[in-house]
Length: 253
Image 1 (cartoon, rainbow, N blue to C red):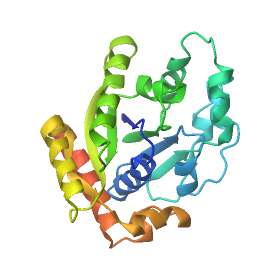
Image 2 (image 1 turned 180 degrees about the horizontal axis):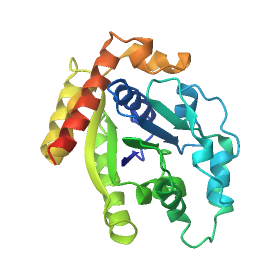
Image 3 (image 1 turned 90 degrees about the horizontal axis):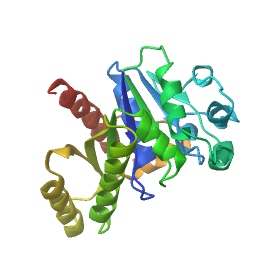
């Protein structure tokens, strides 16, 4: 069971889109996947068919609540979900001054016994307790990067954060993939940013690129992953390719 944090401190990078649709693509090919939504905005939860996770995750962090008891079936085949809610926004205040608070998630994930192949942690777009908790709990990190002029600076900041967490809290943490999202090969900017990312970060950058796609953005409104909302479209094709590449990379290591 691989625990994979999907994170980028920059908002709008395709983080939740990648978490949901990569999980759905993995589920399609028989990889049982659990999505843990750690973002108080709960976008991944809504996308996977859960409108309100209540106090559940907050109680896991603050009152020794059971994570296993929160697991629900999702709208995607082969994908289970631990939903979030706005209640989770109170976790920083509730755990202020708590020694070792960033290790709580790691401990409760270690207690799970279901045979998931992957656990994907959808992180908030900020470097607070929830994101640090996800990095402490994970084996690996996948960083979605939106094609923009700020992509290089944003990714460099993520890498610096990973280094600090690895040095101080989780020596086993590894950035394994960078996934380029919202790419439009028709524009010079998209081609240039993609080339620069590959030059700078080498094999960390996946061969698969998630192309700009209106249907992919529409899928959230219908609470379906793109693999079921538009199964023959480019978005589904790209995330299926990303899932296949993710597995192939792990076979080679």
